[in-house]
Image 1 (cartoon, rainbow, N blue to C red):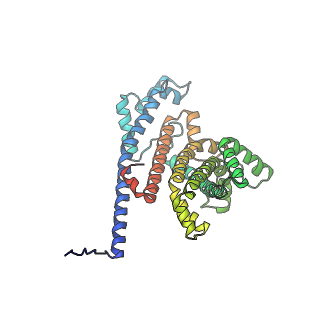
Image 2: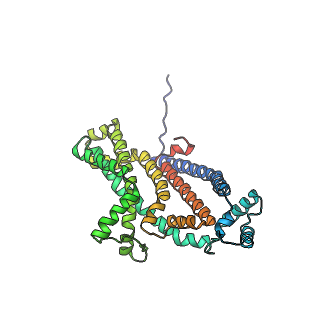
Image 3: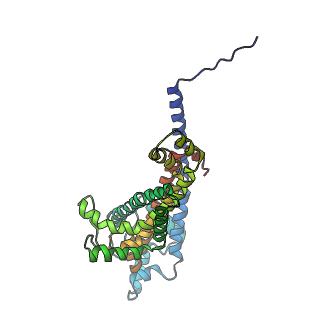
Length: 342
């Protein structure tokens, strides 16, 4: 006599909670792994930043004091900066202060670098966020449109436009935007910055052209990456099944295809965000914006190496935070990446 097999079906709610718990555990493990990896990266970046300053030819104190400074002045400045100590002592003194939140004091203006950061960092972050919005709002929809109209005139126009956007340098585009929309049409200010939190209309006008100049290349790259990823996903068997079930194009694109094409789009947006932070130097100088980019340019011309060190370190931290944010998005989209495999 054959013994009948008994299958016990778990309640659906219990299985769902168990799956959600496993997903949350996987994401948490991935976040912890990324945070641990930041520590040695930050230490290595700090050593490189400090070491490059030490390798600069010439005496830092002489450069900061000026050519007409007396030997006594230079000697006092060297003592003030701790340049008479061994290099490893200088590094650990500087790094220890950084870990305590003290970025030093500008040797030129005498102003705390923390104060400089507090005044200028919000400007750079606002411009960076606005340029990322330009990338997402312009690049991704155009890429989806080109994929849906593949090999049509619309696809050709969007592809040509994105290629042009990648080829145009941000500083040249910025100058053309100033000539067209500031000087000729007088729609936007050519220079200056107003916080959108103080005056929303004037603030948006002051960041519109810099954000467009800074985000155009990223929007073009996001468009091309979205088009390629969407074409691959739309031609998959899963999407054909959805069409056979009678789902609308809107439902297929926004509920299924964009999610599956999300990883390469997030990747390119993350890479572009890092480039935008670095590229803000040129755009902030062009539009006379009081951000970190213009601060580092001024510090370089004044040979204020303490400010340069601090700005570079903060920029590295911003890029690391960006990479962490991208990793978190990866984990949410695909928790299997918590193992570190991509």
